[in-house]
Amino acid sequence: MALIYDNRPYKTRIQECLADDFKVAAIKKAQDVFYDKRNTVVADVPEWLDFRAEAAEIRDHVLNHLDYYVNQFAENAEKAGSKVHFAFDDKEATQIALDILRQREAKMIVKSKTILTEEIGLNEVLEEAGIEVNETDLAEFILQTAVSPPSHIVVPGLHFERNKIREIFAEKLGYTGTENPTEMTHFVRGYVRERFLKADVGVNGCNFAVAESGTCTIVSNEGNGRMASSIPKTQLIFLGTERIVPNFKALDVMMEMLNRSAVGAKISNYFSMMTGPARAGEADGPEETHIIIIDNGRSGILGGTFQEMLRCIRCGACMNICPVYRHVSGHGYGSVYPGPMGAVLTPLFKGYDVAGDLPYASTLCGACTENCPVAIPLHELLMEHRHIMADIEKTRPKAEEAIFTAAAKMFGNSTLFDLGTKAGAIGMNLISNKEGNMPTWTQAVPVMNGWTKSKEMGTLKFKKFRDLYAEHEKNKKKEKK
Image (tube, rainbow, N blue to C red; front, side, top):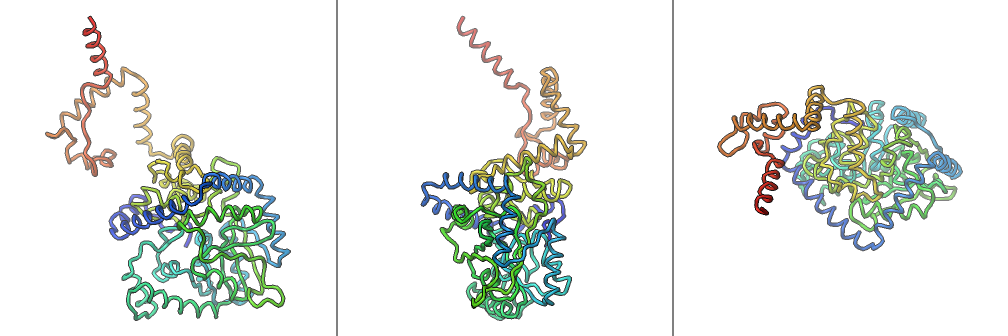
């Protein structure tokens, strides 16, 4: 799966999502649960805002000295026995991985959850090369079996009903049990366990890499991350250049923020730290570890207006509060990065021609910014995208630009404003219905129907506020006399 998995127009995607009653209800329920749980565990930390500020400072410090910390991490990782590779973009990253697998004549891999590999489209490249790819995270396993994109970066299978999951398992995997979640989970556990034991290579992501030691970390609630990193003889770790912390003290702060913000938990079920392959005499761990450090557009964001976006720790807290995500779900964005963070990040990676609609998928209420554990000003960055598209890139349709240019001239000239509002009031009142609203046929009028299809649109009044205010002041003077 590539970063953009649905190239259809934004309106087409969201209309399809809004028509899916189960998906809408599931997202709303999940949002409410995550939000309440997050608030509960955050309330347990009186110094939360101090931690938040410190986390933002840590991320900014790393980003401002990223070349130093990337080099330090790479040097220490190699000292610990890992082999470090650098990839400029998705094609180079997948080619490096493919070369490593071919050199080892690998036929099967197992993967723990890693959104970075979805960003670069790893699965598709490996499958085209004849390598069997097995997702081992339960939700990712469901998505892979169903051939469905994720709807959330932390809980990607939110949009599936249990009876639908059972049907998919029965059709594609020969499952004969009930739709009981526990029973289906036991079935999947047995299925993937066989793959763990047969796999030639294990693939992991990395939540945070520790520069001072060359350590990669994995946060997991299912234990599959640890199995993928310790059972196969060869391990591949995919790391985004920005996901580095200087030391273990900084890691402690970031973990404090990640777990609480992602799923409203004080700590995850599993937290793994991997520093190179297994040493001589150690029973567990891979014989060799490869770390692929991927840029894929990140260096282009450094030092610019949107650098703060690189603070992101992929916790999903912004989408757990976003009113737009609540209704259109992750699939409305068409990107593996949905919600406010995706609406900022995807255009930076793919450009406005491909993802220019996403910055408009926001009410600009600022809830995402308030909820972000590393204080990314998400709504301000969304506004900056809009500013660039409207005033610099000039991506607006010509008709829209003409309308707003004319409106600007009218609002900037009191005479034109008076004439325009009077003409508008006359025209709108001539066609209005008995209730004083625009008639239903206006729903077919372009531009206007964006409002009138779902809301009643009142008419302009002949007397404006300034007229009423002038009358009010005039009457006050008369009363004084």
